[in-house]
Length: 249
Length: 317
Ligand SMILES: Cc1cc2nc3c(=O)[nH]c(=O)nc-3n(C[C@H](O)[C@H](O)[C@H](O)COP(=O)(O)OP(=O)(O)OC[C@H]3O[C@@H](n4cnc5c(N)ncnc54)[C@H](O)[C@@H]3O)c2cc1C
Image (cartoon, rainbow over all chains, first blue to last red; front, side, top):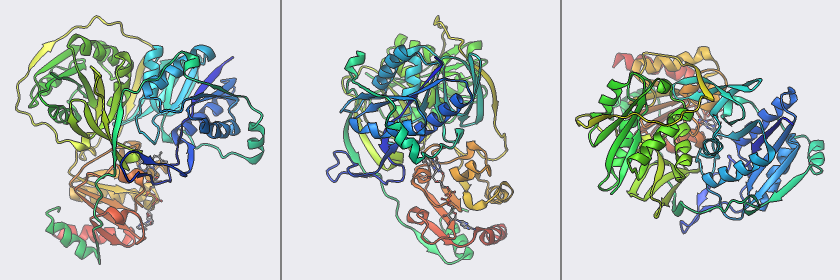
């Protein structure tokens, strides 16, 4: 079966302005709205479109996280994924171990493509896809804004600092997606009902033979140095004068 | 003692200034020896430029036709081999799309943890980095790890100046390189304008510009000021400006002396890209736009009437 594996991370919704806990021991996320990482949603949308074009037969979504991540997996199933796997871990899993978990799932599921978001908007690491590709000894095409599949090859346009780069990768491969790849669909109510009947398996990293380690310790959380609210000027003349005063023009 | 191996970024002709910023970051690790790995084809001048950066103790120069284009799949095994052969304790690259693509692959090959977007060095094993789109600064400790990989948030460091004269060592590596990824093409607007990532002045346009045609107003003001051009995600998504101009969490992180935001609301994902700008000027018709919270100078009004006047007054002065 031609299968695509898609990673889904549960994160604080991008509209929430997160804050540091008063004692600097962590991020105050209690009660915050949680969502699918926006990049992962785009990865899933792309996988669904590939399937709808007849270029894949099954889309499997995977989340590594707490039991609560079931909610995001259900949303992914409602969007159209066929089944879901939760690799449940109550403590945070670092990117290299997340890649190890995904590699074990690849061995089980034998996908021809793994689609991940290029980064998660909580820890902003931008690591897991590249690490997975290295451990799997397969190609990576990161920051994709266009993906075309022809036979055993994917032609991917990547958003890079210099513009748009196109590369060709042999499949199977890991593709990580950028924001302009597509616009994810909205979930419709009947689909939410249907999603309740779709399979969602729960495993632990240990079931897959992975024991996550904490190698990077977070010792303190601080608010960034705040910028001062500046002057609001009356008109262009004042603005030009202020710029001159500061030696900026 | 620490040995920091920095992977040079270049376009086949010039050493990217991001490399000199990585050197400044590495130089903050007490007592560190700093080497730069230059992997390329026809890259002798680039290796020489790397050797001239103050603070660099050596350049490892790997010439190969395979290195003609920066493919992570091809570069990563070579960088990992260099790190092993030269007993690196830290392998750094810039937090640009080049470094973001390559470094995690290197980290996985070396079974090393990676720290992304290093913004401050506290010791050889303690660093600070932004998370949540820069809303939080995280201090991390990797004590006990013999080797770490890092990407350097270039906006947080000044470029190491030229003036050094390190040795360039030609290195040939016997590592098998995979052929499963191939470069096809690179398209980007080549312009005579200053480069967005290093420009002292930047003028950016947002959704308010309304069309690609109107976005020319942004270019005109930028040209009048000798500035680079930037854009918000909304302006890029709408097709007013090309993707490489995007500033923010998923675009470029910049630190110009002057940043002028035209019709940009100031979403956190945008602001994280300009936190280190010295002076932010906002022009927006909505007095309650969040950008005014962090702008040094603000002007409330319609940019389509303000811009011609601003250009006229700048031309006169
Ligand atoms: C995961 C993720 C990553 C993101 N990454 C980025 C990123 O890297 N960079 C980025 O920029 N955004 C990013 N965004 C998007 C961000 O949240 C905002 O949607 C975006 O920055 C808005 O762009 P804008 O300010 O141009 O548009 P808007 O928010 O629509 O603001 C337009 C502004 O123009 C003003 N205006 C309208 N007409 C006029 C006029 N005639 N004269 C003067 N002012 C006028 C309005 O008052 C308004 O404030 C990201 C979002 C997500 C979810």
